[in-house]
Amino acid sequence: MNTARKIWRVGWRVGLCALLLTWIFHSIFVNEARLAHAGGPEAFSKLPRAEQWRLGWQKGPSQLAHRLAQVRIGHFIASILVMGSTVLLGVARWRMALQAQGLPLPWGRALEISFVAHFFNSFLLGSTGGDLMKAWYAARETHHKKTEAVVTVAIDRLIGLWAMLLFACVMMIFNFPLLFKHGWLRALSLSVCAMMLAGSAFLGLAFWGGVSRKWSGARAWLRRLPKGDWLEQVLDSCRRFGHEPFYVLKALGVSMLLNALCVVQFMVLAQGMSLNVPPVALFVIVPIVICISAVPITPNGLGVRENLFVQILDQLGVHPTAALSLSLLAYAGSVFWSLIGGIVYLTLKEKHHLTEADLK
Image (cartoon, rainbow, N blue to C red; front, side, top):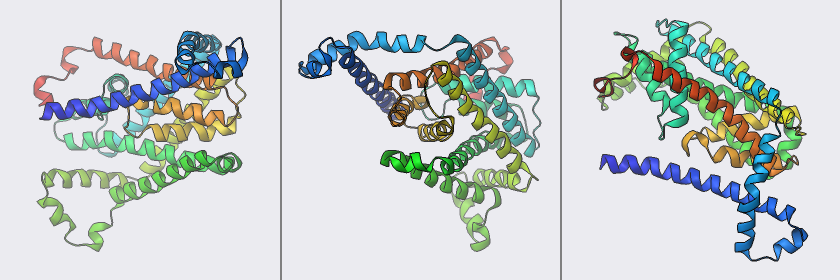
């Protein structure tokens, strides 16, 4: 039963990912064939639906490949380097979380683990992926604070997502005309605001509490739950983040710089593709797409991210094929560093690998 449940949990995500990607590629390919048809768009619309689809998949891929090849190589390399800098900032933020728990981890080892986690986040299917691997490696670095080490991974991910949500909400102030001109964009913006408020409440309770002060029996009820002692230890570990002086401010500062560099990566690619996208608009579009695609619907947000970029950038007059190319090129930068993580993982010494006993 457990095996069947795991297969289903992975299978429906993979299936939805494939469906979304097929849908967006199909729509763009057919549109490219319609625009390139010798008789014009009107003549193309009179063709049988099957013939339209055949022409789309015959001509569309070459048009997409042509768009991808149009990016200037210097800009593409620069975008990869910018993406790499976000990985480094992510390592710096995680080390802050480790230090708040009294777990100093050398830069080299933290970078090694983070690269391996980045690899598994991109290529492992399911809802855990690289974060689970990162948590296990972090736990192996200590003999007396394994729970605290695992908590740092979860909190670092939550802080990063919350900071991106906050970043998106702040950038909405400078993009009110764009957001409220289009109902679909307005709905996405409201969703991001709701996620930010929920995340703020969750982190506030996790770091500073408040329930036990209102309800004296909260801790006793928590201990009665399955693995209650462990849950209480997790809660105490979260409290340390709130009590650590300036941890939240420092982590937020690093996260905001990381978020800005995520947008810069898209700005560099857009410039390299000669796309006329206002930079101020990218500063709200990119974080909105990242936040929505972070919801664990498909592996690594594939399909969701591409559809969002195509739909949103279409409101700014960007050709669908160009918008899809922009998303794919940005994702290629992430894949590049994931492959570096794969190389790190394959070349690690045997003592660094997880054993069967560790996994159990």
